[in-house]
Image 1 (tube, rainbow, N blue to C red):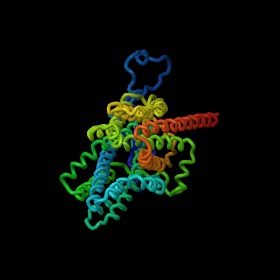
Image 2: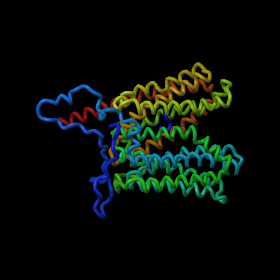
Image 3: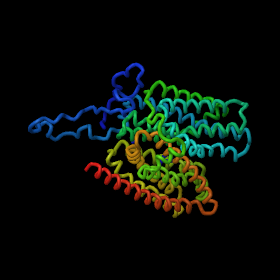
Length: 470
């Protein structure tokens, strides 16, 4: 399961449509702000009067229009390619800056507590930024929000580079970067629906960005560690300033200007947050994004104590840390490339219900091989997110999409911090293998309750649509 918790085989790049009249806001084609229509490479034939021609009825290969598009179709959209590269640059900046700042604080203070606090401060501001600033994602043009967020991060890191910046200032700047992150990520997710449409290309685009994030967990800290052997921590921070600036330039020059979704309207702050969560179905789907990450971080948070418990080497610890991200990447790649949108929707609930069962293997205090297998299987079950993304974007009104996705991102990051802290606290009183197995039980019970709630909202929404159509 991921912690950060997607048409045709050859869609064309969305047609920008006619140029807007002078003074008119630029948008997506003739209707500013409308989601682009992904034109299929082969359009369906117009039904003719009279008997259907034999050539149409003759058996043959499955029409391309009904096949799953695959990830290559997403990369054919030029604007998505720009967003993807900008995401990669911004992600590298975040990973390297986190590592470099942690090392810098330790060098200045020689305090393990302050060093670890520097890393942990990346979680709490997500909650603050995600609840108080979520409305920014819909109130202002999305491109402007994305560029400003990147520039704020670049500015904060640039101040970190200055030798005169005290340790307290470094920690405050770290919080500022973390508070901006959910707004940036939520706005980017909402913009993907504009770039790729609300259908299967959006689901696959979201999946690709998640895969990159998971890959960064595997490789980013290694790259950062190598970088710190060649340059000082402040030098590494200076390089991350450049990555944020490159991301800002790509988004500014490579994406279209779109109007704000809810300019000047809607409540801000906590009132606007409750306005989104008041919808029962959105609330249930939001909890399906939040609850699994709360529990899924437990085995990784306790990987080092468990390696010590079963008496394996530090190299084996690396396997325990990598097993779940590798399983997540493999599961998403398979679901995105081999399964249709309908199939991905059907397997959401089965994968959710089965996803934490591998944790129960820890009750046997397994050795390294079995523990790695259990974690990889749990990670692969995270393929449920592709179908869940499609449900979520369908349920959220367009004018609330940026806010809802910002809240979703902020909640996922916050609960991970809570899960890590809870895992460490429980492991103070119980053996690690008991904590992980107990987590599997608690998580399964919680997911069963949420799946029942989501099914109830499906029945209610279906009844409402039936009554409306009569």
